[in-house]
Image (spheres, rainbow, N blue to C red):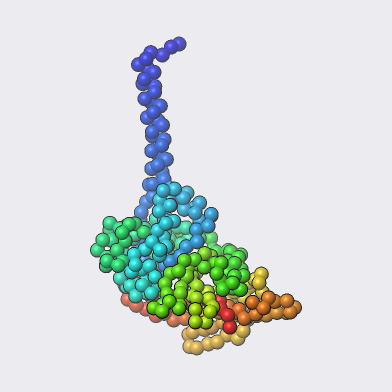
Length: 321
């Protein structure tokens, strides 16, 4: 039975409306990310360099949509941040003023870290060197962020797999013989004479809050450094330090076996070093002077009221003797 011309027009319009609804529905689904009011408790837990592997990138796109995820990928590291917070020195000097940023929680990443957006429009009153010219993004440990009235670590995230830490440490230590040249990223900052240069890292280290390489042109050597979450409670910080020592002691490195030295104590501060050793006389000479050092150091952190408090945190360094 033939349809009338009017009925055909009506049916065509109906299908066009349905098609447009589907397209707009998909678009809305990808851009209807709910921003929740958030407060950063400790900017010392901010990640300045992020390694976006396939798993993290796919997860980000599924949660935010392709368009917003691309913005996050481009603007979530210090290379996209205002000059006042684009270096480790700048962030240290301006950490109290960073508490003035208006931020919103977007989502949790695969390992539970919190992703925040820093809208340019809502941060126009920040100091000139800290004012974002476009929306930027911060990634912090979930415990350093309040979402509403609850810590962001309410997210049910799996603990980091030890094998990922070991794989990453293998990648880093295997490049020790090349002065870490194959795992360093762009230059982040340098001293006035240009003889001490700090680089970002192409390799993430699970559980760390910040990692970088320091090239000392005077000594002709490059060293690796990682900071880990700490605590204003010395006993809690000690447990975090001891857990990191245990993880290093359990490493099965491809380059070389490790021997654990006697721990050095100085008040609440601790240092545990690991040297390479050569049980069969086959160790590559380039690794014979490699040292992995885990320390518990004292620094400062901001409390919930914005006051400075003493904080103890573990660090990890890889260098040559």
